[in-house]
Amino acid sequence: MTKSQDLQAEIWNKSVVAAGQSNTTAASMRLLPALNAMIDITTVRTAAAEDHPPQVIFAMLVLIALASSLMAGYEMSGASRRSWLHTVGYAVILSIAVYVILDLEYPRLGLIRVDAADHFLADVRNRLKETVLLSALQY
Image 1: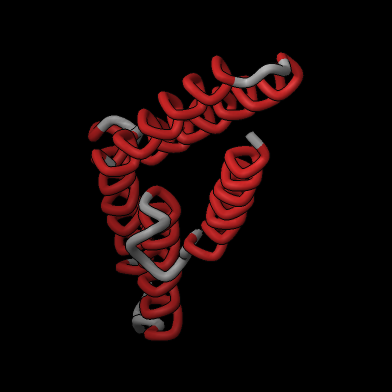
Image 2: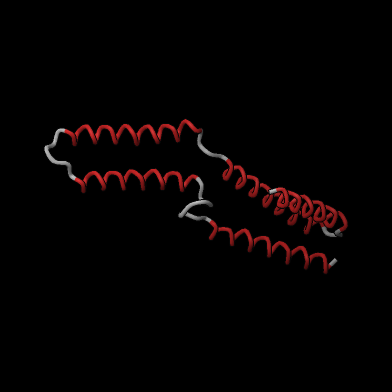
């Protein structure tokens, strides 16, 4: 994260200097807003990655799982014979539901991954490098 912020600051500072040295304002008017938008997007992504529900939400999820298990167990206690299919099925479905909820909250850690979407950021970075390099060669 620190390296990313340092790179953003370096890109911004070099772009401002290059825009000031440029004889055309059209290049500056296109480059600086695009860089500003890029930095804003990374800030939004960082905030979204670090913003999690309060711990009370996770506590309520556990409480609901325990309460529903208690009610299901109480209802099944009246039967003369326990249905293992229903018992195991309920446990599996409840476990999967809780796991998916937690996995969606931390998409870089579990089975549900968003790493595949990172190639868009890498493509933008590469295009930005090419653009800055081409504009530096032109001036």
